[in-house]
Image 1: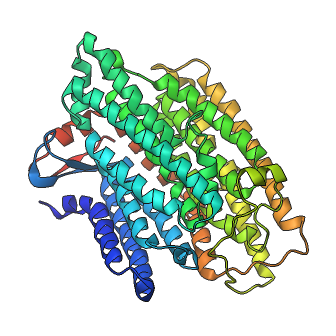
Image 2 (image 1 turned 90 degrees about the horizontal axis):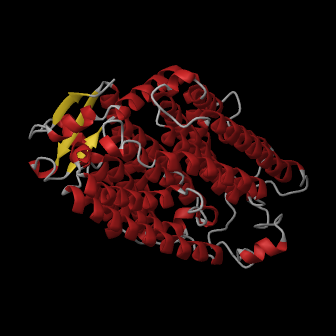
Image 3 (image 1 turned 30 degrees about the vertical axis):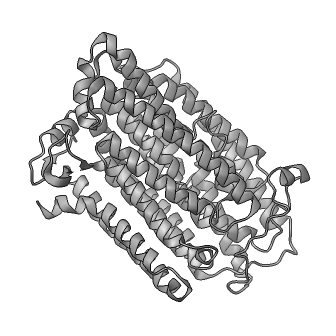
Length: 539
């Protein structure tokens, strides 16, 4: 087997071995070693993801057959542009979160670093797998790790949100199993490429059962992606999580978005026969409703962490709506937006703790809201004086806050503006809708994006005034370099995405074109040679 094909499994094996090794070294005496292993392993994952992205950008699609069993009988991992992009984004966020946690949060509970690596294993596996059954396996693995990470640090609000989070995701797992069972009962396969080849030939009397299974499966991932009205759990859970956990959780909703984007175009694209376009209208209007709900939530948020949680809904809703529109240009712009918004939101979750440090938790929230979320009794076991207080700290935090606000709201000159501009340009282009599309959907997206951007701007401005201007006598927070560096790292990537917008957009366009022409994916997976394959991906 070629070395290039063998590298595809590294993002799964590396965190598995690192997490298992950390469990053996757990304890106060080995905490520094475990922390170092976590950061070193995450750095290695970023390097591997960069190499894999370069391989995919060269126009190749790598297929790794575990045990050399051919699809659809064996397990396959598939690397293309989309999976490589999601791998790099995931591990970049993970690196920032892991470094930030070293200041103090990794000491707030047991097994933080091992759970962190197991979460990365599940995320990387979900983006690489080529069949639905193993997607379920990786889905459960990342959820199991996320349960422990969400509860990390204890606290009343965190335990409440964690219990709700566990119940909701167990329900999603049940729906996942039901949907997969229905699909397998109709098609006799769970390999994604094999499913794409069989769906057009499904008999008319069985097509209803196939679409029912796909619908149930979609609900499971829509629940994870936070589509309204299934998003009731998300803002509270994300706001309650510790900052480094909330930061890496910014990619969790994108797992659902990724699967919906992948399967909707692979199984129900233009070549799916009678099932072509199945569910696209639900994604479009549900995504727009989610964006509106998230925008209203940002306006109503009296706490910066909840503001970040509702911003996650705005991001997910926008990408889901773009997916439902089913056009190549819109998909490429949505991928650019997905990367930009996820980086900005992840940085914002890290920044929230620093700008609120030294303030009473929820000090500006009304009493009823604080009591409802149990925040008046919560004590942060990890709270301690860190860093050195200097006057310039507030200025640096203010610059970082403005950067996050610009990216999340989609204002110039950073990448959020370019992403929204590209989305609207593609959505309002008449040529983009020549092959179909919902009439008026482009204008609906225009109205929703402008409203969500304005709402986010108002909410961010209000929060900034409250934090930086309304309390002139507040204590200057103690901030360490190791806490500030990850935030600036993520914002620098957003700036780089702006400067290199041309090459980045070209990569996104190539990714979207290959997604909308899945025949190459199907043939590469089903015809992969025993030693792995290296075939040209659709340009």
